[in-house]
Image 1 (cartoon, rainbow, N blue to C red):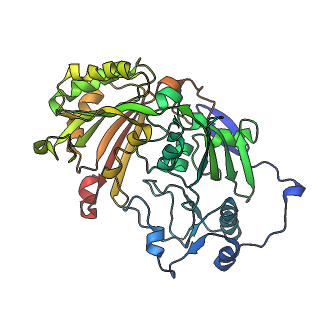
Image 2 (cartoon, one colour; image 1 turned 90 degrees about the horizontal axis):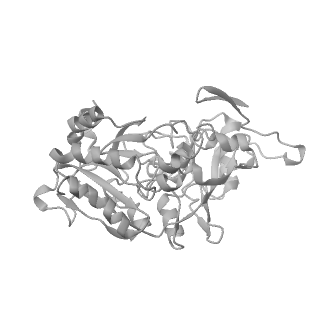
Image 3 (cartoon, one colour; image 1 turned 90 degrees about the vertical axis):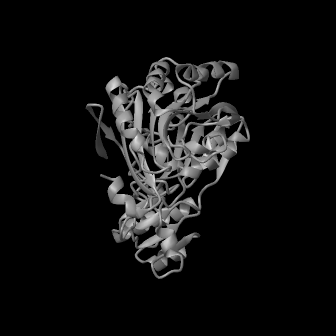
Length: 421
Protein backbone atom coordinates (compact mmCIF):
# COMPACT_ATOMS: atom_id res chain seq x y z
CA UNK A 1 0.00 0.00 0.00
CA UNK A 2 1.13 3.53 -0.60
CA UNK A 3 -0.23 6.87 0.48
CA UNK A 4 -0.95 9.56 -2.06
CA UNK A 5 -1.91 13.11 -1.20
CA UNK A 6 -4.61 14.38 -3.53
CA UNK A 7 -6.54 17.66 -3.40
CA UNK A 8 -5.67 18.37 0.22
CA UNK A 9 -6.58 14.96 1.61
CA UNK A 10 -4.69 11.72 2.07
CA UNK A 11 -6.06 8.91 -0.06
CA UNK A 12 -4.87 5.37 0.55
CA UNK A 13 -4.13 3.48 -2.64
CA UNK A 14 -3.88 -0.31 -2.49
CA UNK A 15 -1.38 -0.65 -5.30
CA UNK A 16 -0.94 -4.39 -4.95
CA UNK A 17 -3.68 -6.77 -3.97
CA UNK A 18 -2.68 -9.90 -2.02
CA UNK A 19 -1.45 -12.74 -4.20
CA UNK A 20 -3.27 -15.95 -3.33
CA UNK A 21 -1.51 -19.29 -3.03
CA UNK A 22 -3.18 -20.47 -6.23
CA UNK A 23 -1.67 -17.58 -8.20
CA UNK A 24 1.90 -18.27 -7.05
CA UNK A 25 3.84 -20.45 -9.47
CA UNK A 26 7.41 -21.57 -9.48
CA UNK A 27 9.36 -19.58 -12.03
CA UNK A 28 12.91 -19.19 -13.21
CA UNK A 29 14.66 -16.26 -11.61
CA UNK A 30 15.52 -13.63 -14.21
CA UNK A 31 19.11 -13.11 -13.12
CA UNK A 32 20.77 -12.65 -16.51
CA UNK A 33 19.91 -11.13 -19.85
CA UNK A 34 20.46 -14.54 -21.45
CA UNK A 35 17.66 -15.97 -19.34
CA UNK A 36 15.47 -12.99 -20.25
CA UNK A 37 16.21 -13.55 -23.97
CA UNK A 38 15.30 -17.21 -23.72
CA UNK A 39 12.05 -16.38 -21.92
CA UNK A 40 10.78 -13.65 -24.22
CA UNK A 41 9.21 -13.99 -27.64
CA UNK A 42 10.42 -10.47 -28.37
CA UNK A 43 13.98 -9.20 -28.78
CA UNK A 44 16.52 -8.06 -26.19
CA UNK A 45 19.01 -5.54 -27.58
CA UNK A 46 22.21 -4.49 -25.80
CA UNK A 47 25.21 -2.34 -26.68
CA UNK A 48 26.87 -5.41 -28.21
CA UNK A 49 24.04 -5.89 -30.72
CA UNK A 50 23.55 -4.21 -34.11
CA UNK A 51 20.80 -1.62 -33.94
CA UNK A 52 21.44 -0.67 -30.31
CA UNK A 53 21.73 3.05 -31.04
CA UNK A 54 18.50 2.96 -33.02
CA UNK A 55 16.76 0.96 -30.29
CA UNK A 56 17.81 3.31 -27.49
CA UNK A 57 16.81 6.51 -29.35
CA UNK A 58 13.66 8.28 -28.17
CA UNK A 59 11.42 10.97 -29.62
CA UNK A 60 13.32 13.86 -28.03
CA UNK A 61 16.87 13.81 -29.41
CA UNK A 62 17.97 16.06 -26.55
CA UNK A 63 17.69 12.89 -24.43
CA UNK A 64 20.75 10.64 -24.91
CA UNK A 65 20.70 7.66 -22.54
CA UNK A 66 22.44 4.28 -22.61
CA UNK A 67 20.22 1.61 -21.05
CA UNK A 68 21.61 -1.81 -20.18
CA UNK A 69 19.10 -3.38 -22.53
CA UNK A 70 16.05 -2.57 -24.63
CA UNK A 71 13.56 -5.42 -24.41
CA UNK A 72 11.10 -5.17 -27.32
CA UNK A 73 7.96 -6.84 -25.98
CA UNK A 74 5.39 -8.51 -28.20
CA UNK A 75 3.05 -9.86 -25.52
CA UNK A 76 1.93 -9.42 -21.94
CA UNK A 77 4.07 -12.44 -21.04
CA UNK A 78 7.12 -10.57 -22.36
CA UNK A 79 6.28 -7.60 -20.14
CA UNK A 80 5.99 -9.92 -17.14
CA UNK A 81 9.44 -11.30 -17.92
CA UNK A 82 11.01 -7.84 -18.12
CA UNK A 83 9.36 -6.71 -14.88
CA UNK A 84 10.61 -9.88 -13.17
CA UNK A 85 14.11 -9.29 -14.55
CA UNK A 86 14.17 -5.74 -13.17
CA UNK A 87 12.95 -6.92 -9.78
CA UNK A 88 15.24 -9.97 -9.58
CA UNK A 89 18.37 -8.03 -10.56
CA UNK A 90 17.52 -4.70 -8.93
CA UNK A 91 17.82 -2.94 -12.27
CA UNK A 92 15.92 0.26 -12.94
CA UNK A 93 12.92 -0.27 -15.23
CA UNK A 94 11.91 2.27 -17.87
CA UNK A 95 8.65 1.75 -19.74
CA UNK A 96 8.38 2.97 -23.33
CA UNK A 97 4.93 3.03 -24.88
CA UNK A 98 4.55 5.28 -27.91
CA UNK A 99 8.05 6.72 -27.27
CA UNK A 100 6.69 10.28 -27.26
CA UNK A 101 7.82 11.36 -23.79
CA UNK A 102 9.51 14.75 -24.04
CA UNK A 103 11.26 14.33 -20.63
CA UNK A 104 12.56 10.95 -21.82
CA UNK A 105 10.76 8.78 -19.26
CA UNK A 106 10.98 5.83 -21.68
CA UNK A 107 14.70 5.34 -21.09
CA UNK A 108 17.45 5.71 -18.48
CA UNK A 109 21.17 5.05 -18.17
CA UNK A 110 21.80 1.49 -17.05
CA UNK A 111 18.11 0.57 -17.00
CA UNK A 112 16.23 -2.20 -18.73
CA UNK A 113 13.67 -0.68 -21.09
CA UNK A 114 10.34 -2.44 -21.54
CA UNK A 115 9.73 -1.27 -25.11
CA UNK A 116 6.08 -1.87 -26.02
CA UNK A 117 6.47 -0.93 -29.68
CA UNK A 118 5.76 -4.55 -30.61
CA UNK A 119 2.33 -4.26 -28.96
CA UNK A 120 0.22 -1.86 -31.04
CA UNK A 121 -2.90 -3.84 -31.85
CA UNK A 122 -6.27 -2.05 -31.59
CA UNK A 123 -9.49 -4.08 -31.58
CA UNK A 124 -12.88 -2.37 -31.82
CA UNK A 125 -16.19 -3.70 -30.56
CA UNK A 126 -18.40 -1.33 -32.53
CA UNK A 127 -21.63 -2.60 -30.96
CA UNK A 128 -20.39 -2.00 -27.42
CA UNK A 129 -18.44 1.11 -28.51
CA UNK A 130 -15.28 -0.12 -26.81
CA UNK A 131 -11.71 -0.16 -28.11
CA UNK A 132 -9.09 -2.60 -26.80
CA UNK A 133 -5.73 -0.87 -27.22
CA UNK A 134 -2.34 -2.44 -26.56
CA UNK A 135 0.15 -0.46 -24.50
CA UNK A 136 2.51 0.45 -27.35
CA UNK A 137 -0.15 1.92 -29.63
CA UNK A 138 -0.23 5.52 -30.80
CA UNK A 139 -3.36 7.59 -31.21
CA UNK A 140 -2.99 7.20 -34.96
CA UNK A 141 -3.43 3.46 -34.45
CA UNK A 142 -6.54 4.17 -32.38
CA UNK A 143 -8.01 6.80 -34.71
CA UNK A 144 -7.63 4.66 -37.83
CA UNK A 145 -9.20 1.61 -36.19
CA UNK A 146 -12.08 3.44 -34.51
CA UNK A 147 -12.64 5.85 -37.41
CA UNK A 148 -13.50 2.91 -39.65
CA UNK A 149 -16.63 2.54 -37.49
CA UNK A 150 -17.40 6.27 -37.19
CA UNK A 151 -16.19 6.24 -33.58
CA UNK A 152 -13.48 8.00 -31.56
CA UNK A 153 -12.23 8.66 -28.03
CA UNK A 154 -10.42 11.73 -26.63
CA UNK A 155 -6.67 11.73 -26.98
CA UNK A 156 -4.05 14.16 -28.08
CA UNK A 157 -3.29 16.75 -30.74
CA UNK A 158 -0.53 14.80 -32.53
CA UNK A 159 -1.38 11.35 -33.89
CA UNK A 160 2.07 9.92 -33.11
CA UNK A 161 1.50 10.49 -29.39
CA UNK A 162 1.60 7.27 -27.38
CA UNK A 163 -1.68 6.14 -25.84
CA UNK A 164 -0.04 4.98 -22.62
CA UNK A 165 1.90 8.07 -21.61
CA UNK A 166 -0.86 10.52 -22.48
CA UNK A 167 -3.65 8.52 -20.86
CA UNK A 168 -1.90 7.76 -17.58
CA UNK A 169 -1.24 11.48 -17.10
CA UNK A 170 -4.85 12.47 -17.82
CA UNK A 171 -5.13 12.88 -21.57
CA UNK A 172 -6.24 16.15 -23.19
CA UNK A 173 -7.41 16.36 -26.79
CA UNK A 174 -9.82 17.84 -29.32
CA UNK A 175 -12.75 15.83 -27.92
CA UNK A 176 -12.18 16.58 -24.23
CA UNK A 177 -14.81 19.31 -23.91
CA UNK A 178 -17.37 16.92 -25.39
CA UNK A 179 -16.36 13.64 -23.73
CA UNK A 180 -13.81 14.38 -21.02
CA UNK A 181 -10.18 13.44 -20.59
CA UNK A 182 -8.76 10.17 -21.87
CA UNK A 183 -8.92 8.76 -18.33
CA UNK A 184 -12.62 9.66 -18.13
CA UNK A 185 -13.21 7.26 -21.02
CA UNK A 186 -11.11 4.46 -19.60
CA UNK A 187 -13.24 1.38 -18.83
CA UNK A 188 -10.46 -0.83 -17.51
CA UNK A 189 -6.83 -1.81 -18.05
CA UNK A 190 -4.71 -4.93 -18.05
CA UNK A 191 -1.64 -4.08 -16.00
CA UNK A 192 1.53 -5.85 -14.87
CA UNK A 193 2.41 -4.75 -11.36
CA UNK A 194 5.86 -4.79 -9.75
CA UNK A 195 5.37 -8.31 -8.38
CA UNK A 196 5.04 -9.63 -11.93
CA UNK A 197 1.32 -10.31 -11.62
CA UNK A 198 -1.15 -9.52 -14.42
CA UNK A 199 -4.18 -7.73 -13.05
CA UNK A 200 -7.31 -6.04 -14.28
CA UNK A 201 -7.99 -2.61 -12.85
CA UNK A 202 -11.46 -1.11 -13.17
CA UNK A 203 -14.19 0.34 -10.99
CA UNK A 204 -15.03 -3.23 -9.91
CA UNK A 205 -11.59 -4.89 -9.80
CA UNK A 206 -8.68 -3.32 -7.93
CA UNK A 207 -10.53 0.02 -7.79
CA UNK A 208 -7.78 1.79 -5.80
CA UNK A 209 -5.25 0.91 -8.47
CA UNK A 210 -7.71 2.08 -11.13
CA UNK A 211 -8.07 5.39 -9.27
CA UNK A 212 -4.29 5.83 -9.14
CA UNK A 213 -3.50 5.15 -12.80
CA UNK A 214 -6.11 7.66 -13.97
CA UNK A 215 -3.87 10.71 -13.80
CA UNK A 216 -1.23 9.39 -11.40
CA UNK A 217 1.30 8.55 -14.11
CA UNK A 218 3.08 5.35 -15.05
CA UNK A 219 4.68 4.29 -11.76
CA UNK A 220 1.95 1.87 -10.62
CA UNK A 221 2.63 -0.83 -13.21
CA UNK A 222 3.01 -1.46 -16.93
CA UNK A 223 -0.32 -1.18 -18.73
CA UNK A 224 -0.42 -3.76 -21.50
CA UNK A 225 -3.99 -3.03 -22.64
CA UNK A 226 -6.35 -0.07 -22.31
CA UNK A 227 -10.10 -0.41 -22.82
CA UNK A 228 -11.72 2.86 -23.91
CA UNK A 229 -15.32 3.95 -24.27
CA UNK A 230 -15.93 5.23 -27.81
CA UNK A 231 -18.26 7.93 -29.07
CA UNK A 232 -19.97 8.61 -32.41
CA UNK A 233 -17.45 10.92 -34.10
CA UNK A 234 -16.78 10.53 -37.82
CA UNK A 235 -16.29 13.65 -39.96
CA UNK A 236 -15.67 16.95 -38.18
CA UNK A 237 -15.41 20.60 -39.17
CA UNK A 238 -11.84 21.56 -38.42
CA UNK A 239 -8.68 23.40 -39.33
CA UNK A 240 -6.53 26.43 -38.47
CA UNK A 241 -7.18 30.13 -39.07
CA UNK A 242 -4.04 32.32 -38.97
CA UNK A 243 -4.11 36.00 -37.93
CA UNK A 244 -1.71 38.93 -37.84
CA UNK A 245 0.09 39.36 -34.52
CA UNK A 246 -1.41 42.85 -34.18
CA UNK A 247 -4.90 41.31 -34.21
CA UNK A 248 -3.92 38.48 -31.90
CA UNK A 249 -4.87 39.92 -28.49
CA UNK A 250 -8.42 40.60 -29.70
CA UNK A 251 -8.64 37.09 -31.19
CA UNK A 252 -7.35 35.45 -27.99
CA UNK A 253 -9.77 37.45 -25.84
CA UNK A 254 -12.64 36.46 -28.11
CA UNK A 255 -11.58 32.83 -27.77
CA UNK A 256 -11.41 33.14 -23.96
CA UNK A 257 -14.90 34.61 -23.75
CA UNK A 258 -16.35 32.16 -26.27
CA UNK A 259 -14.89 28.97 -24.78
CA UNK A 260 -16.33 29.64 -21.32
CA UNK A 261 -19.82 28.75 -22.52
CA UNK A 262 -19.31 27.35 -26.02
CA UNK A 263 -21.21 24.21 -27.02
CA UNK A 264 -19.26 21.13 -26.01
CA UNK A 265 -18.94 20.14 -29.65
CA UNK A 266 -16.25 22.82 -29.99
CA UNK A 267 -12.72 21.75 -29.02
CA UNK A 268 -10.54 24.45 -30.58
CA UNK A 269 -7.56 26.27 -29.08
CA UNK A 270 -5.33 29.32 -29.82
CA UNK A 271 -1.64 29.08 -30.67
CA UNK A 272 1.52 30.69 -32.04
CA UNK A 273 3.51 29.33 -34.99
CA UNK A 274 5.85 30.40 -37.70
CA UNK A 275 3.74 30.22 -40.84
CA UNK A 276 4.24 26.78 -42.43
CA UNK A 277 4.92 26.28 -46.17
CA UNK A 278 1.48 24.88 -46.98
CA UNK A 279 -0.63 25.52 -50.10
CA UNK A 280 -3.12 27.75 -48.30
CA UNK A 281 -0.42 30.03 -46.82
CA UNK A 282 0.69 33.04 -48.91
CA UNK A 283 4.28 32.39 -49.99
CA UNK A 284 5.50 35.75 -48.78
CA UNK A 285 4.32 34.98 -45.22
CA UNK A 286 5.97 31.57 -44.84
CA UNK A 287 8.33 31.58 -41.86
CA UNK A 288 6.82 34.67 -40.26
CA UNK A 289 5.45 34.36 -36.71
CA UNK A 290 1.65 34.41 -36.66
CA UNK A 291 -1.03 33.57 -34.15
CA UNK A 292 -3.84 31.18 -34.97
CA UNK A 293 -6.92 29.36 -33.75
CA UNK A 294 -7.05 25.64 -34.40
CA UNK A 295 -10.72 24.65 -34.71
CA UNK A 296 -12.47 21.34 -34.22
CA UNK A 297 -16.27 20.99 -34.24
CA UNK A 298 -18.07 17.65 -33.90
CA UNK A 299 -21.71 18.78 -34.23
CA UNK A 300 -23.98 20.13 -36.93
CA UNK A 301 -21.81 21.65 -39.67
CA UNK A 302 -23.89 24.80 -40.15
CA UNK A 303 -23.81 25.54 -36.42
CA UNK A 304 -20.08 24.97 -36.36
CA UNK A 305 -19.49 27.25 -39.32
CA UNK A 306 -21.33 30.05 -37.54
CA UNK A 307 -19.24 29.62 -34.40
CA UNK A 308 -15.95 29.50 -36.29
CA UNK A 309 -16.99 32.51 -38.39
CA UNK A 310 -17.11 34.58 -35.19
CA UNK A 311 -13.31 34.68 -35.24
CA UNK A 312 -13.36 36.18 -38.73
CA UNK A 313 -15.62 38.92 -37.42
CA UNK A 314 -12.92 39.89 -34.91
CA UNK A 315 -10.08 40.12 -37.43
CA UNK A 316 -9.31 39.37 -41.07
CA UNK A 317 -7.43 36.07 -41.46
CA UNK A 318 -4.02 35.91 -43.11
CA UNK A 319 -4.73 32.33 -44.18
CA UNK A 320 -6.96 29.42 -43.25
CA UNK A 321 -7.67 25.81 -43.99
CA UNK A 322 -11.06 24.93 -42.46
CA UNK A 323 -13.30 22.21 -43.81
CA UNK A 324 -15.02 18.93 -43.16
CA UNK A 325 -12.62 16.01 -42.75
CA UNK A 326 -12.33 12.67 -40.93
CA UNK A 327 -11.39 13.04 -37.28
CA UNK A 328 -8.27 10.94 -37.84
CA UNK A 329 -7.05 13.60 -40.30
CA UNK A 330 -7.53 16.37 -37.74
CA UNK A 331 -5.42 14.55 -35.17
CA UNK A 332 -2.56 14.28 -37.67
CA UNK A 333 -2.55 17.81 -39.13
CA UNK A 334 0.54 18.86 -37.15
CA UNK A 335 2.45 15.59 -37.48
CA UNK A 336 4.78 16.79 -40.23
CA UNK A 337 5.99 19.67 -38.03
CA UNK A 338 7.02 17.39 -35.16
CA UNK A 339 8.83 14.32 -36.52
CA UNK A 340 10.95 12.17 -34.27
CA UNK A 341 14.50 13.45 -33.88
CA UNK A 342 13.95 17.09 -32.96
CA UNK A 343 15.37 18.82 -29.90
CA UNK A 344 12.57 19.39 -27.36
CA UNK A 345 12.27 21.73 -24.39
CA UNK A 346 8.72 22.20 -23.08
CA UNK A 347 7.03 24.05 -20.24
CA UNK A 348 3.39 23.69 -19.21
CA UNK A 349 0.96 24.86 -16.54
CA UNK A 350 -2.70 24.51 -15.61
CA UNK A 351 -4.54 27.79 -15.00
CA UNK A 352 -8.03 28.69 -13.87
CA UNK A 353 -8.35 31.81 -16.01
CA UNK A 354 -6.81 33.51 -19.01
CA UNK A 355 -6.46 37.12 -17.89
CA UNK A 356 -5.78 40.15 -20.06
CA UNK A 357 -2.32 40.36 -18.48
CA UNK A 358 -1.64 36.72 -19.38
CA UNK A 359 -2.69 37.35 -22.97
CA UNK A 360 -0.42 40.40 -23.10
CA UNK A 361 2.46 38.27 -21.80
CA UNK A 362 1.79 35.67 -24.48
CA UNK A 363 2.04 38.32 -27.16
CA UNK A 364 5.21 39.70 -25.65
CA UNK A 365 6.98 36.33 -25.88
CA UNK A 366 4.95 34.11 -28.22
CA UNK A 367 6.17 35.70 -31.46
CA UNK A 368 9.70 34.63 -30.50
CA UNK A 369 9.09 30.96 -31.33
CA UNK A 370 12.58 29.94 -32.52
CA UNK A 371 11.66 27.52 -35.32
CA UNK A 372 8.72 26.46 -37.46
CA UNK A 373 8.44 23.36 -35.29
CA UNK A 374 7.99 25.37 -32.08
CA UNK A 375 4.59 26.45 -30.84
CA UNK A 376 2.45 27.53 -27.92
CA UNK A 377 -1.00 26.05 -27.34
CA UNK A 378 -3.74 26.92 -24.83
CA UNK A 379 -5.97 23.87 -24.43
CA UNK A 380 -9.42 24.25 -22.88
CA UNK A 381 -10.23 22.09 -19.87
CA UNK A 382 -13.90 22.62 -19.19
CA UNK A 383 -17.15 21.15 -20.44
CA UNK A 384 -17.15 17.40 -19.83
CA UNK A 385 -13.78 17.62 -18.05
CA UNK A 386 -15.57 19.37 -15.20
CA UNK A 387 -18.32 16.75 -14.97
CA UNK A 388 -15.99 14.44 -13.05
CA UNK A 389 -15.51 15.23 -9.37
CA UNK A 390 -12.09 16.32 -8.16
CA UNK A 391 -11.50 13.21 -6.05
CA UNK A 392 -12.82 10.65 -8.55
CA UNK A 393 -9.40 10.14 -10.17
CA UNK A 394 -5.77 10.98 -9.44
CA UNK A 395 -5.80 13.79 -12.01
CA UNK A 396 -5.22 16.85 -9.86
CA UNK A 397 -6.34 19.71 -12.10
CA UNK A 398 -10.12 19.46 -12.43
CA UNK A 399 -10.43 23.05 -11.26
CA UNK A 400 -8.35 24.31 -14.19
CA UNK A 401 -9.93 25.93 -17.23
CA UNK A 402 -6.85 25.86 -19.46
CA UNK A 403 -3.63 23.94 -19.96
CA UNK A 404 -0.95 26.24 -21.38
CA UNK A 405 1.90 24.52 -23.22
CA UNK A 406 5.07 26.14 -24.55
CA UNK A 407 6.53 23.48 -26.85
CA UNK A 408 10.05 24.42 -27.88
CA UNK A 409 11.15 22.20 -30.79
CA UNK A 410 13.94 22.67 -33.32
CA UNK A 411 16.20 20.39 -35.40
CA UNK A 412 19.72 21.71 -34.66
CA UNK A 413 21.30 20.79 -31.28
CA UNK A 414 23.70 23.71 -31.70
CA UNK A 415 20.73 25.96 -30.87
CA UNK A 416 19.93 24.23 -27.57
CA UNK A 417 21.60 26.73 -25.28
CA UNK A 418 20.04 29.76 -26.98
CA UNK A 419 16.57 28.19 -27.04
CA UNK A 420 16.45 26.99 -23.42
CA UNK A 421 17.36 30.18 -21.58
